Length: 98
Image (tube, rainbow, N blue to C red; front, side, top):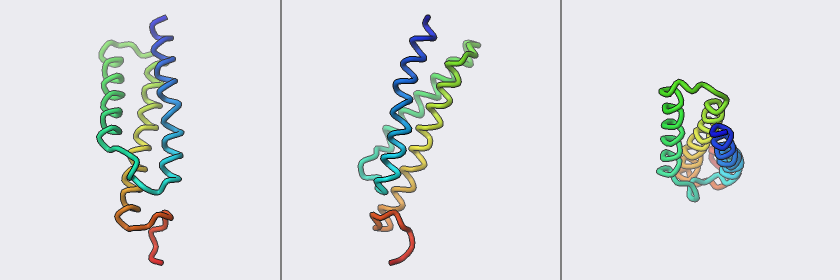
């Protein structure tokens, strides 16, 4: 039962990450994104994964942790791409000169 509740929590948090990735890709700007927040979430998921591995609890919940970590890491990649757009001064997302 504990794993079921943990799974529900992870799925609820996890559903927000793909939506965030899509929103941030469309924004072409890192201005509304927070690098410390993204890194904090990644650290939390890594700690959760480490706890599962150290306890020897290899269940489907571990797969959900990895899936969430993947989506948050995608947000990290989008952050740096969007930061590059911001520095290039192009809000349209094109890195080629006008």
